[in-house]
Image 1 (cartoon, rainbow, N blue to C red):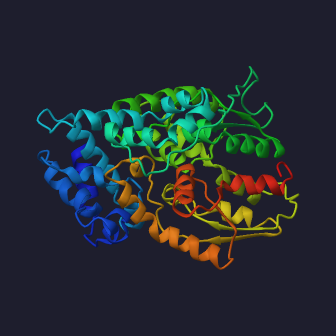
Image 2 (cartoon, rainbow, N blue to C red):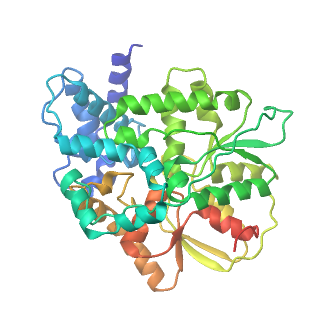
Image 3 (tube, rainbow, N blue to C red):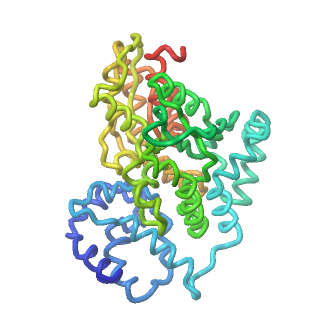
Length: 414
């Protein structure tokens, strides 16, 4: 079956039920957005013949994957939309973006480069980004919202190589950690705590010098660079994948990219990455099921509201963090499951998207404020770094990664 026949078969799988549009967080707050069904399968039939000019709604999709999660036929709607974005950018007669938007796409897509710059002097960077005049300048020059939250920078995560140790069955237990840009440059403490937890379980953690997974690049139209990053990362992982080492990430978006997008790349290691990549708590739950997870937990007297990130749901692994944290004495967890936070990577940073992002997240913010107000929980927890940024922006409630709670139970941190 050639690619066009395959695409036609996927289009025929769409039953026009509109469940994806009914559940789409963007469609709920933006009456001008035709929804994932209209933008995906419906318009794809026209795009198979030609590029439709003036499809400004292509950039309204936040790539949260909710439509794919709810589609009863398994239609890859956001993949169609991303491919349409790619084709629209490459079309010779397409309407070019303004210089301002091209520069913004370059800046927001290069989360890795921003991180490397931000951590040269993180305290100064953070202070500068709090200056009102600087935020106004970013809004005017690059259309980066002056009201939106910007992640703070911190001391970066230290890389840890294999130091020439033999890989494979004869080596002591080892895992490869893909931290992602946010953990590496903005919240390295989470990465360091994760490594402590894995060491407590008897695993040596290898942290190679990865590039960005590529998702921020794709989301901002930098498709060629995203492809190059994927190939680079896969080549870096190749000896570890061939030795059978698990690839673990604490970032749900990085995890989804490696599980869903990397296997499509044309390289031998792409055949292994999908089945050897794990969300941290997915990996821990498998250890628990095999009786290999130490249960020497201390009591942690704390209550948390839990937000399941969209890109965790899209992985189809459930909520393993809830199952693990449920084993800890004293911990009370309430799964809010109140929808998308709205930030969606760099989506909510954009000036024209900020209000929409806040409207998308309003249901979640209300659930958090109501729950915290009546004493159901004192803090929030979620695996996604940018979800954490948006939750704290929208509610002011302290939010942390679930691995921090687990580390407290193991007595590794206070």
